[in-house]
Image (cartoon, rainbow, N blue to C red; front, side):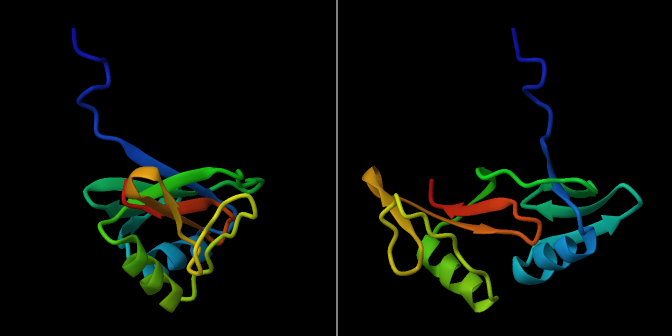
Amino acid sequence: MTGILESAKPAIIICARDRARSVAFYRDALGLRFVSEDQFAAIFDVAGTEMRISTVPDFVAHEHTILGFKVTDVEATVRALLGQGIVFNRYPHLKQDELGILTLPGGIRVAWFQDPGGNVLSVTNA
């Protein structure tokens, strides 16, 4: 038996109080491909997956990662994002390097940052 949603294509939903500001961030700072916008959401294409930014007037961001980007070179990606003015989160209980990258056993590397709405995003090689 196959899973009910096994062949369904996922969609990413990002909540934001200020959709225009978030659209600019995801398009201009992160370089994601803007597709369209209507009264419900702004739509981006993220490597073939639809990402929707929806306005939620009373939205409060969570402390944990809501979206991670798997990249081949974490350090190069972090440096490029720093060049776009992105600030990486520092967590006192983690041993992050000078760029904010945490290296875990097995060579897994991850760094966190926030979008304008406070959503935590990450770049990782895992």
